[in-house]
Image (tube, rainbow, N blue to C red; front, side):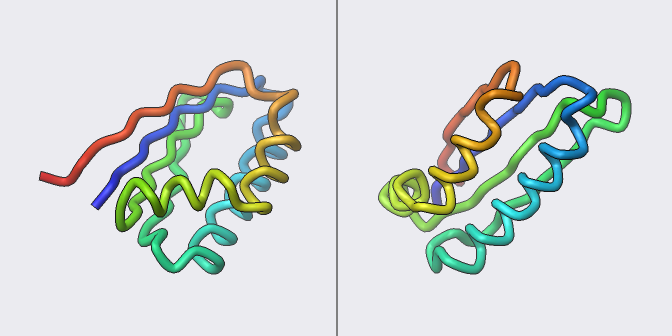
Length: 94
């Protein structure tokens, strides 16, 4: 299994809009991508603008399919102007 973690930071005024769109992205990924096994959206209770993702895919190729999907590209284009930082890490399940 291939694990992806992402930490987003957005401005507090944009946090609710970003989170709504992120939850839709998670639902789309799980519904449209059979090799996307998990897509958790986590928030920081102390900082509304920090959002952490935990994603689980069958393999790296499945994640590449995710990155190339229309729903991901649309999401990325829409939120790019409000994202202050984005840190992506990849992992393998031991």
